[in-house]
Length: 191
Image (cartoon, rainbow, N blue to C red; front, top):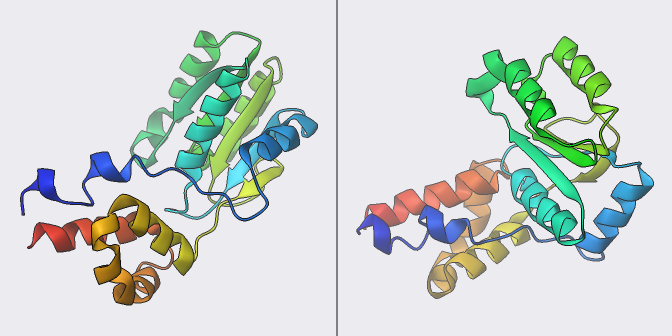
């Protein structure tokens, strides 16, 4: 199968957005964030939707008149994390909410420095794998139903064929939805 025909190609997967658990909403998340003085963390293990949620939440905040300055850090940027954070601080206006996707890339001293520097801004929102950096705004978790829903939304014509494999795929990747979808891409690439 050609990459452009793969139902799990990146451009299609990236259209799938974060799905809240029953009873949660973007508006409720924003209210909770405001109640936490706009300083909070979105927590969850790898592949659970933190980045997708923070992207959607930032779009929601901007649509509601908030200024956002965002920085994404990954493991390859650990050595330059402080420099990248300094660039974020220098480019943001004081009424901005600073958003750091990948706060675990900062060591303890860098984290303390960022916390101190960010006090003069409107807020600080981070994503991290473990709780403890800031008070938890929400926790991103996954289950087999999350993966079933993702597959149904991403590749509706293939969803029925894959239903019997979903649970084993979820277990194989320890609940990491991103890795499950990559695995499905690879499976279709071999067809």
